[in-house]
Length: 543
Image 1 (cartoon, rainbow, N blue to C red):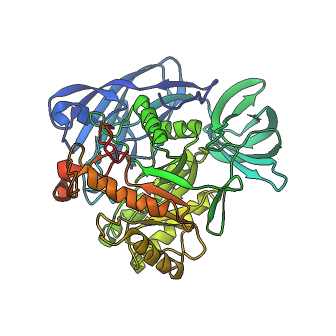
Image 2 (spheres, rainbow, N blue to C red; image 1 turned 135 degrees about the horizontal axis):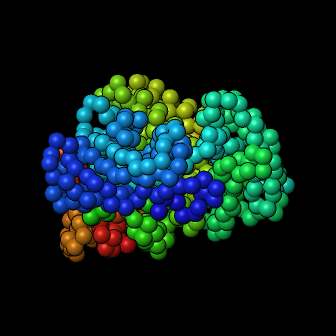
Image 3 (cartoon, one colour; image 1 turned 30 degrees about the vertical axis):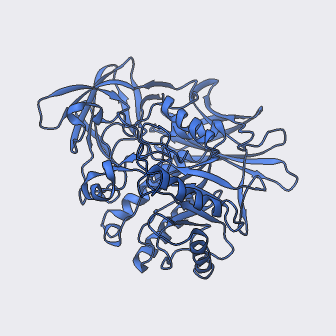
């Protein structure tokens, strides 16, 4: 399954999920492997890091343009069609697509060489406090395109002074033909329909916009997660050539001094940080496990989730839209040092990640905050320039959501003036033995003089390690479930009753696998054990 709803009624598509042929490069052994999935599902490859080759046959019934859509390949992909190289992509957590024009009817061979090695060529995928899996980890789709097709739709809603909704819609249309095309673009949303004539030059791409008032719609919120289908069609001489459907919600995110507002009303975020990780399937969680995670989060009283530290599978975002969870989604970066940020590939690979994930996920009403560069070198002058560049790029792509960067550079961060929301990771009682309230007071006073004055404040990470089944009732030693409870309770007692704070995100929802290299000594079991449930979602006392 690619999405929770059907995106096309006219365009022919084929979900390529299923069993693919797989082999390790330069090795004779062959495997049958599930896509989407990680190659760690093969017992012999559970710790393999290197290059793997996926292949399968696709059958085309007639001459057509093909579009291959990859929702996520970890982390580098080289794609071949009939042994011809057609494209390369870096970044495990962002979608990409490739066009193969004028493909003849018959059998064709699709091959993807996937690489998950750590090297200087990879600035973002480094040994880290989570695991970099290998494989076609998210869905793959084959689409049959007319010469002119709808590439993307974007939807932005505004709550006007009279409490009525207005929306701006943009369609991106591509013309692959060698001649100019004149077509009708038809829109449908919330029982309103609009048509416009569009003309596209040969081999071109253009954007077309429609704005309208929608007085009868219901606003999207956690309490009423109302969704509407936005459909666009391309028509030529009464023949429907192509279509694209998005699922949208009417909602607006704003700020008023230290408050975060949804549809004009203050909200308080009660959230968890969550990694895409589960034993046996790695980062390729099936829909049932994604939905169960949200069941558990809802049972814990959460209304929000942070996609640390990378863009998430769009199926999970679809579930959040449908269930009314508020989402903080961020680009791919965690704890990078200045030396790592000076990797010559860092700027380019970071920019590509932002350019890919924000337009792809723009229409999700659940996403209310964009985040970037978690715990990176924001205390340095060079780091600040890189933060500035990424803040600017995100705001150029989207002015409808606030942007933040979670920091743990206490009292040295140089970038708080760049944030719309100040987000601080504090581990009182775990890494720091200071009383929670005293440390918060000290941190808050510094924030007011470091560029964060009169901005909303989120405690973006707090928590403690607890190994499932490790009990120490009397001494409550660190790593015991009892000590974890004690620390979390002390933090929550302060944060949930402090009017200076507009949201909290507990670190973390579930234990997750970490990279053994560099992390084994401080992460028992080679897991980050700060989850309130373990990796199998078995509850600890902290629940």
